[in-house]
Every structure is written in structure tokens, then in C-alpha cells.
Image (cartoon, one colour):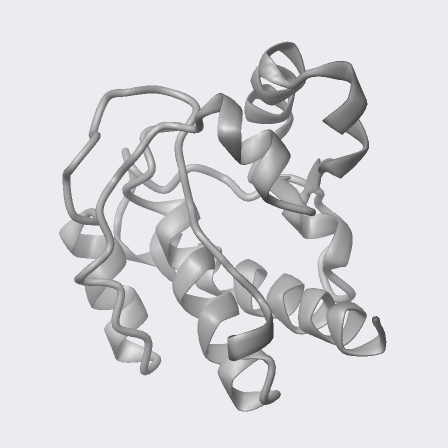
Amino acid sequence: MGNICRSPTAEGVVRAYLDRAGLLSEVEIDSAGTHDYHVGAPPDVRAQQAAAGRGYDISALRGRQVSEFDFVRFDFILAMDRDNLTLLRRACPAEHRHKLALLLEYSSNFSEREVPDPYYGGADGFEHVLDMVEDAALGLVKSLSRK
């Protein structure tokens, strides 16, 4: 939504997994929010702390809002939940809607398809987000490796 919790966490994790797979130079990755609440802001300090605890540095990331150019520029646009996916579908030109999906479609260990927003909860919510994102990131990078 605001690009300070889930999506920068996902960007940091996917970036690290791509690097480990030797694919980082082949893939452009960026995160963005569907709302303009936190444009220019760093990730939530709790997201940074949880990520750092697992070896991911997301401190240099800054919030931004999805732009029309993103729908053209990127091959995949992955949302954290159905509400954000709906907002993306509304904004996305018809010829690019095939690029939209939920991040957890790449998960193999979670039956849920939505990453919950940890913003109003405690540290355990950020850890749960990391669990889900790491699993989905592994599936995404495996999928990209095959391509």
C-alpha cells in the first residue's frame, strides 16, 4: 500500500535470492506502493530490524508509488494482497494485465495467498511476513532460473 513494510521487505529478499542464484545482473527489481502515503520514506523501522535480523539490508530503499511506466517496464508486477491487486488491475492498461499476480502464488509452504500487513501489529507480524516472503522469493527465483 504505502511501500514501507511488505513490498520493500520482498524487494530486499528477492534481491538477495537473485544474487545468490547469480541472476541479480539479469533481473531488474523494484518495489512500489499503490498509495502515496510514504513516498520518499525509508521502510518502517520494524521491517528494517526484522530484515536485518535475517541478513537483508533494506535501509536504503525509499517508498514510491506505482507509475504507469511500471506496467510497461516490468515483466511481473506482484501484489501482496487482493486489495492491492485490484487497485493494480484498475490502473493497469489491458495489454499488460497478464503481468499482475500475487507474490504468494510462488509460495510452496503457505496455503494463504495474501501477505498480511504487519503495520498495526507487533514484531511477530514482521517475522511472519519474512517467512512468507522468503518462501515465495525462493519459488519466484526458481521460476526465473528456468527462463
